[in-house]
Amino acid sequence: MDPTRIERRVLLALAAGVLGGACRSGRRATDASALGDRLAALEREGRLGVAVVDTGTGAVHGRRLDERFAMCSTFKLVLAAQVFQRAAEGGPALDAPLDFEAGDLVSHAPLTRALVEAAHARGARRASASRRALAHAAQTTSDNAATNVLLRDLGGPSAFTAYCRRHGDQATRLDRYEPEMSDVGPGDERDTTTPRAMAHLVARLLGPSGLPPAERALLRAWLLETQTGAARVRAGLPPTWIAGDKTGTGGGTCTVKVNDVVWIEPPGRAPLVVAAYYDTATLAEWPSAAQEAVLADVGRAVAASHL
Image (tube, rainbow, N blue to C red; front, side):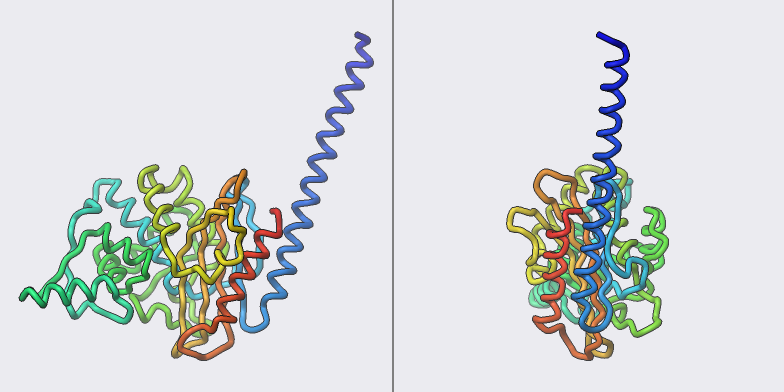
């Protein structure tokens, strides 16, 4: 074959590849811009921060990516990972028990309160549960007392923050225990994260450079089992998309916070991590259905973006 014709074919193929890549890059930029516009339209009050991380490429898109938001209970996902990792690295086993008593109970303690009451009924002052059971309760039902018992066992809020730093997260910080850590006013950086930092942290923990494979699979299973976010981001995703999450909610003495960190497995592509933090301008004890629905709309925006 004529070498000139071969060279022409190669050049055409290279040009097609460059143009195709440029088209894909341009399409991604357009999709990212459209996602930002959709998210901005959802922000009818307060601040809405959202990060969407593509675990296949590492790309992140969203809104208010680097602004600080109160974590509320979303940190419990990372706390469970910390418990898993310590056990995998030779620390206390997941099935090793921890003791607690009535003085450890705080608001919203479904598992731990039942165990303390059962202990009292049989004449015992203290109850106990395995670290696995306490971490499961913290993740799936957001049990605050279980969270505090684990947090003390791990070394307190500063140890949690150090764990985040170990995994490359320089923004997330934990300063207090439950339930005080959810009381975050304007300008208070205690117990906060950024959407970008949390989304990247969860993507790392559930990726090959984070938790060991068995622990990674267990945390994923617990995320899928959790039902507290049924009305939030997951409500806006297509039914064929597999998703699990950890919610966080604040209110009472501060403006209502409606948060959700979600692991998403769309068919035929790498998983996504969405970190959505909605700090409303409303003073109330609990979010309204309309405020939770904003996060469902975040899910719809992510699904429509084709990032």
